[in-house]
Length: 277
Image 1 (cartoon, one colour):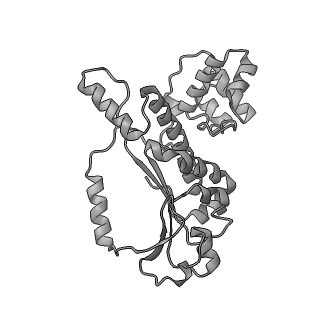
Image 2 (cartoon, one colour):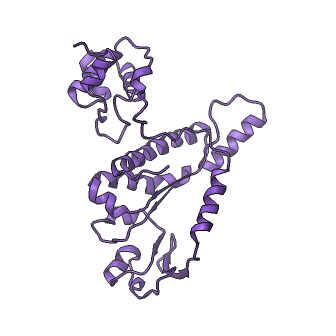
């Protein structure tokens, strides 16, 4: 999936954090340590003829092609999901690659760099740029054309290696091969299609749902505690309402301790009958 719009790219990174947390819950459920162990356990249960509600999970690679541009347009909001994914996502099969042509400390902050144990520097203009990437001089002396310095995880010294040239035709051949592979069953839809509206066809099973939709849109934010206070209901019911509001596309996904972003407007609620004229 490709997200040239930076707001969508931020949403994709936040989705990655949510998916990471979901996968960790599955590891805990099946008492395994990593994605490989989880997939083996699912295979074992299926081979024994047991009913399993969960399925095997694919590996996910998230690539940010120009991280400096993302930092300039989105700002510090991107630092948190990047850091969390870099810290924790590897064990559950989510890998993150950041690339930038402007390796400054404003782009590659200390907290981000500290959580990327494996780094590569191609030819850069100055010693400062080299140190920002690999904590050492040398990248400013590289020859270009695939010449690079590689800092492996767990090592304090860099290695000089060379990347092979890959033509556009070869890249296309690899892409076509990958496209021909069976697709995972998991739904990777992150950004709602503007031509589809979840709200239009959404079926809810709680009579408070329309009022909850109006409450969060009017307030401009959404949280479980807010619904608890507003409707004087318990945590479990408020949590289910929040889940339904997200499924309907009225609010955004959970992002740390922040309130949920409200995606729908009062006009949307009027169109679908949740808010009377």
